Image (cartoon, rainbow, N blue to C red):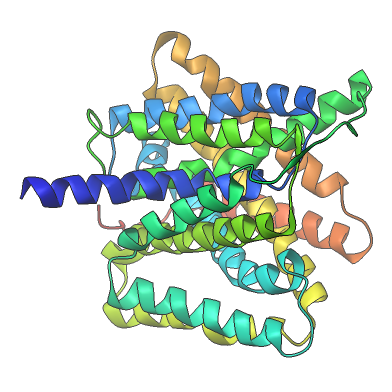
Length: 355
């Protein structure tokens, strides 16, 4: 029993580590000033997540915290968060072969089918958390600075650009909030969040001095794959108590045909899904940040306020950073979030979702 507990805790750590995406951070090659300032700001989200699980840690994740705000806000979080991450799962299946690996011909089609089928099988027929040791340490291995050259190409940014770039880059670690959706021991396992952030920070910082060889792309592949699997695991853990097994099966299976649609026009597919996904993501995370103002006490509320500011900036950055039809899509997504808010607050749902 003790050995099984150690294995489960080890798998939990690698799950949390994968939500900090070290393989993706290894490929960014930011300037040292941008990396350091971004990590300082990102630490507010990490600490807010850490303090949250120290209070309560269940498979309902962020949703359990937003319940402190009442039925309508928590239901608003539930809707926007699920839309955001389900879209993310679908378009990232396409993103890996076409954008990360830049494959052509039939290769990206074959790889996207493999990715979608593999995550479906892992989620439906196994406990996916036990796949994360391989995924996480593959990211670390391909991020190691073997045969790398010192980079001297960084240019010191201006203060305004440093400010904007710092805010946007600090949002790279928001997926660490997914760690709240896999049950852990709040007294023994909560430190995994801080350790995962530390490891990813080290990888990001040494990446500022080094130019990565081609094989580092594999770190990004495993990083994105790990995020997809972590996100789908979180979705399943969240909705499992209040949908049937058949519905849960279909929810996971649908990723396969949906990602196949993306192979028809991968660029349009990715852009069209990523914008509403990001809009709903920051919408939902802002609600979570506000809910922690109720949960956390004293000076801990500072990280909640900073995080809420970051998520509000993220929303602004997504909307103002688009143009053409994508701008209208971003505005429509935001307005739909407002409409859902009004409906829930003016006519709150009577049916209670099971705890």
